[in-house]
Amino acid sequence: MTRKKVYLIIQTVLCVLLFVMLSTAAIRIFREGSARRAEHPLESIYTVEAVAEQFKYIAPVLFASVGMAAAGLILGIRDEKENKGVRDIRSERDLISGRVTGQSMEVNAARAGQRHVRTGGWTAFGICMVPVIVYLLNVAHFQDENLENMFAALLRGTVPWVCAGIACLMIAGILEEKGIRREIEALKAQMKSERASADTSGDIGSKTGGLSGGTMTEGFSGGTMTEALAGSKKDKVSAAAKSAEDAGNRKMVILQSVVIAAAVFFIAAGIWNGSMHDVLIKAINICTECIGLG
Image (cartoon, rainbow, N blue to C red; front, side, top):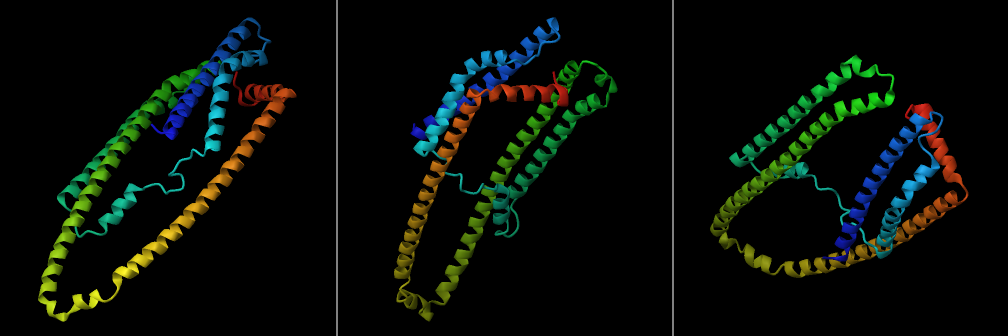
């Protein structure tokens, strides 16, 4: 296992763990604050003490994730395909399809399968959206004075169906992509077959015109030497381009490291001078007064 794979695995685990811990901490703060507010209505749900209590469990994972990100920038661990274009299999299919004459039975079968999968995915998505529309059109679901209970009921009544519909579209997309790949393979096989037929016809034509002396003339054209010179020149150009790309990547790593260091410095300065408390109070006021949460 290479260093890059180990780094990506560790960073992925840290990111997932951080997401779970942050979500759990937010839910715990809200529940504890709601219970405390039920006993003392004047108290706030979100307090600095509650946030600090939860943050001390999250801080090690957060700092470890930030440290791993900085280590990746310093060590130059980057995605090798970040500057490459995304492969569009549909455009590739269309390009290959334009180079063949007609369509074989395998190609037609693959395209029919893609249409069926696409239709089935959107049909399943529409069926999943029916309960969501019915819930939203029912006025009785929006007459509760308690906004938190009403919002929770809205999530329970709609989110599962929305997730199921999106899952149906994702599955249909994956199956359709596999069908396109099968179609591309069938088109390539058809193109090879047509090319072999054309080569056979060309060989017969060359035998009939063998007295023209074309082969002997081509032998003195120096084509091999020209191709060798062109290949060496192409190698030099590619090496120069790679060197320039490496230099640009090093400059980008340095710039990113400086930006991250500045961000960490300003965050620490804000925590030190008490600005974190002001930001928390403003966020609480926005959520409770403007949006209406809490």
